[in-house]
Image 1 (tube, one colour):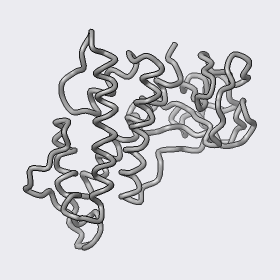
Image 2 (cartoon, rainbow, N blue to C red):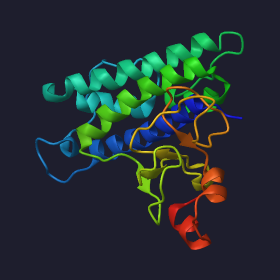
Image 3 (cartoon, rainbow, N blue to C red):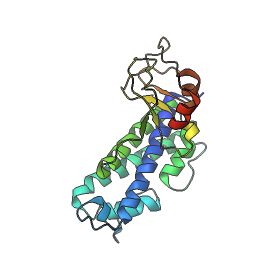
Image 4 (cartoon, rainbow, N blue to C red):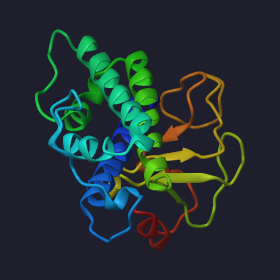
Length: 221
């Protein structure tokens, strides 16, 4: 079964891929909104992102035209590069796929050991947070219909992470931030992982929570 740390890494990677797409769209939008991210254009300088992603290159070039957001660009670039470096190091015997960094990471996250996946998830979350903050874009959390209680902490803040285009693969998290206590935890995660934020696969939500068919379809589960 997939370790929770790998699930978090995958969810963060998909969320960042959505944020990259939003940055691209904002960077190429021509709405005359001077001074915001929407009005910026890809520049012609040679300051690359370091991981061969055409989308990232265009976004970075446009964002770096504003000194105000240079730190944001550096944060995104550095964290994505660090995540890829960690994955590449962990997969030294099998190798990392070539191509855009986030697409490559998406394809290998399930193959990472939990410790590496935990660190990859952390770096991707930092990059995603920076990208979304630059766009004033909220997270990808979708409240579950009926507002059911978390089986671990009892708080009614269960959310589906909805960035993956495959809605049947949307994981469920507790947005209250409760963490697994290990083998004695009553969270119901198939793999118990001490001090890891709770996360469940969509199949768990369908089988465990008191959601009817219409509710599950509404939530994409």
